[in-house]
Length: 137
Image 1 (cartoon, one colour):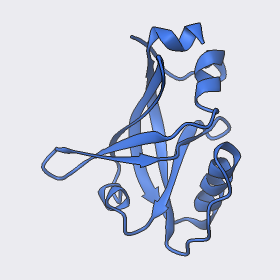
Image 2: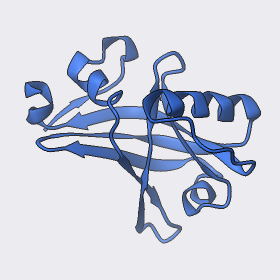
Image 3: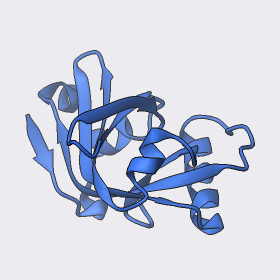
Image 4: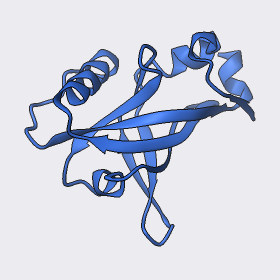
């Protein structure tokens, strides 16, 4: 296993490619008792703002967990290739943040349906983990 701590301008090409290909991810947040809550999500990197975004409904468990900043991990797997990003996330209802997150999501996945209750989870990434299969492509 290898790790990379941003330097967003220095992301290794295979790692950046993997995080821009269309892959479903899992997002892990922590419950108040410290146990993990793991759900499938789409995660989109934002190189300009040096973060990652997840969009979700405001009433979701993950959004409730992140009303105050909390530790998260997002992971994606494709055969022997895998990568996890770790960091701190917070839920935001700021219309500019939500629009930016929706735009990044649409660029990686597809345009999401309208959701007036949508919030954005902004992840400040502290490091990426990845297996050797990722570098082999």
